[in-house]
Image (cartoon, rainbow, N blue to C red; front, top):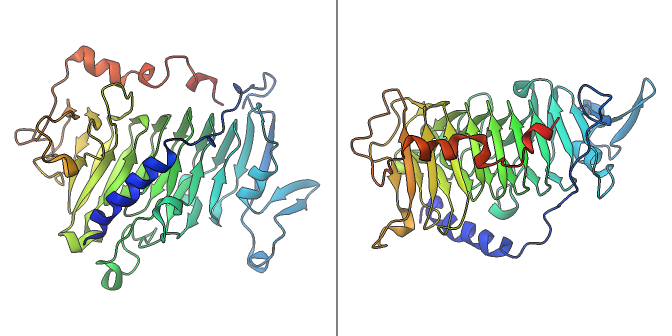
Length: 362
């Protein structure tokens, strides 16, 4: 059985497991520093360990009179539980080989350049625990950071690490799993092949981000806006399935569920072919508005996946006001036509930010 079919059982197990989850960190509303232009109260500095430190357990050093962390996780762990003040973790240019769990609220994780500030790991044995970066905290911001699951992925070749050996063995390997509400990402990268970005639940905002993958590489039950993001399909990395992948797998399950993925503008490019999405939930909702599609989109667009035999389809799937050679909607399955007013309800920031939490972020 193909790996992308086996993943169905694993991912639905995650939904069942998290349905009663109590460990999402719900912090107080974060306080900004009115005397700091960056609006943070203090900054923790992180630099990558030099070669002779690679086997050391020492994660805090003093340089020029200042404490410097050589592990992002160590910097996170130093912040007290129940924190309600915005704290910046500034990550210097380099590669950080670590698996990170962010469970503290009111954190700004910021690098200098996303292309040169990488958090990498290669976990893949268990999808539920494979994420290089996991966030379960409310009020989190990331800027200029790239999250990578290196399993089957070559960062610089943007594809399979060893195409001859691994092309038929692509497995689920998550780069980032976002489970906390009120989270925002600016100019960040998410690189992987299958299940790259697990937009699990909560309200999220992605601005000018880069997302690489081939199979279900933007997935979950998040209520999210992707604003001017570049999505790159790595179809050549899944030759076992003919180079045909799936961009989204959204798991909305009822009419009352507010979740959905909304793509404003941006570009979908890459190689091979890809469906815009397949239904990971009975009421799956994905909206593209004003997006430029290169000639890689399967003309039918949307797949019902495991809901093929449902007599009534409750999906909300649409791509409107878009451009490019992959924008022919004449053969789209399940395409929903939204009025201008309906489209505005989804593309306006109020869809995820009725109370103004984005403007309160640093």
